[in-house]
Amino acid sequence: MSVARSRAAPAVPAAGRGEGERVHSGLRLAAAYAWRLLVIGALVYVAFMVLGRFQLVAVAVFLALVATALLRPLADLLARVLPRPLAVVLAVFGSLLVVLGLLALVGNAAAGEAGKLAGDFRGGISRIERWLEGPPFHVRRGTLSGLHDKISTFLSTHRSTLISSALSGANRAVEVLTGAFLALFCSIFFVHSGDRMWRWFNDQLPETARAPWDRASRAAWHTFAGYTRGIIIVAASNAVLVGIALLLLRVPLALPLTLLVFFATFVPLIGSPIALAVATVVALAGRGPVIATVVLALIVVVGQFEGHVLHPLVMSWAVRLHPVAVAISVIAGSIVAGVIGAVVSVPVVSVAWSVTRALRAGPPGQA
Image 1 (cartoon, rainbow, N blue to C red):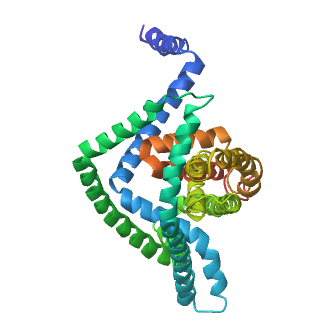
Image 2: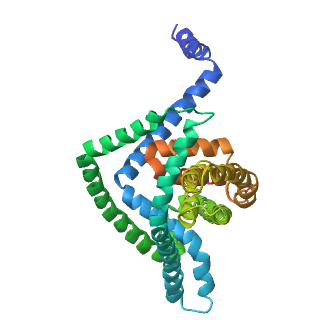
Image 3: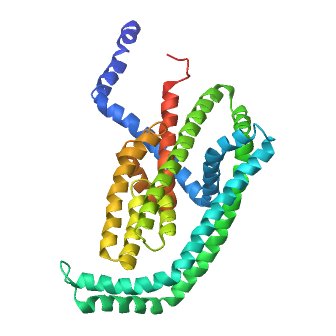
């Protein structure tokens, strides 16, 4: 009988396997992916929470990486005829002086046009009111004046809140200066010896993990540097086109608006239209509806040129993201971290995608 029981024993696992096979294979696959996605989502959430706590440091390091991607080729070129430390100093501080000089030029231009622009705005607001009162809007005359009174009442009522906001803005300015100094400090060392710093870090890893980490880091840096240089080219091209148009149309504050377009382009898809919308309002107040309509047409022209010519031509070799992925990344980044999130979302997603492709492809010699 013991022999019979031993022979009958395997029947129990067989029944268990039969019950397990009743679960559809697709459901088991979905469950396997689901818990892995939950783990990845939890890790991403924790990473964002940590970065949120150290936002100043994260932004400073990001800016240092941007400066490194732009200035490392210049420093390498200067290092052919100069000592490496001197080449790095010239590249970093020379570029910083150029940027500060441009900002000073734009500030002087804005200050010089401030008085004239105030008068243009007063006359422009009257023209806007007359324009809105006519066809096709037919806004009642008392509506706009009532809105002006409401704004004045709001400002006088919430004056203490506005003052406290200004004081908190002063504290924020101190943080910005601290972050800028940290970014400058890090960029000097990244430009000088960033490759040696990475090799030191890679040597601290287990030997089996060094090759994948090195392959992933090279793919990430290639994508990040390509995106940074590409977005600079796109932003500069947009700014030059818009600046020439605003100067020809004699729109007030043409240089500050050009600088605004340059920085707004760093937010893909939505940055340039928002900056040109601001330029349209300035043109409407300073030059009238006809010039404002021409500036409004620039939104369409520049958007088409940027989307169908500049981005495919400049960015395709470094960043391979579908426009839908770009749009979702920008909106999600803005929800998570505001303007900073909108700026860094596309390079972060691009780097993550390039790292994934590099790890899936395996070593270069692998079939």
